[in-house]
Amino acid sequence: MARSIDYGNLMHRAMRGLIQSVLTDVAEHGLPGAHHFFITFDTTHPGVQLADWLRERYPTEMTVVLQHWFENLTVTDEGFSVTLNFGNNPEPMVIPFDALRTFVDPSVEFGLRFETHEQDEEDEEDDADIDVEPEPERQEAEIVSLDQFRKH
Image (cartoon, rainbow, N blue to C red; front, side):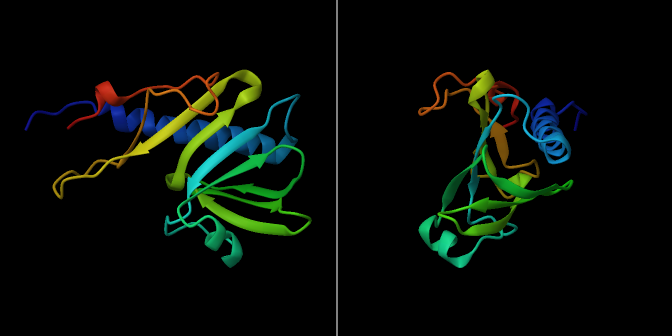
């Protein structure tokens, strides 16, 4: 088998690293200016930790906003944890980077969407890539596409 460069997986890891860097900076210095984040994630991912009532309310997907009130933002190589306020009820949560579906910063019209695909058993590459479709609720977001580079 010929050796090749897997640009799709490399870009996928780079985008997760970008999110990790941004969140690490926010954890250390706070949100600069008007920046804020809408982060959508898969609540069924095995590494996600949520309060039971949140998991019941959002059984498959949840979008959180990091803007005015959040505490205890901690970022690791695997993901991040944060405490958010739900109707004056602070709730801690853990979100692995692999559970992310979208990351949007509308203040600068930036967004990433990670799509999942069914895999064949012999397909060993990561099951997420970045899609070219614009965010339906945030048309102003810039979406980066890697579909043309993904091995099928």
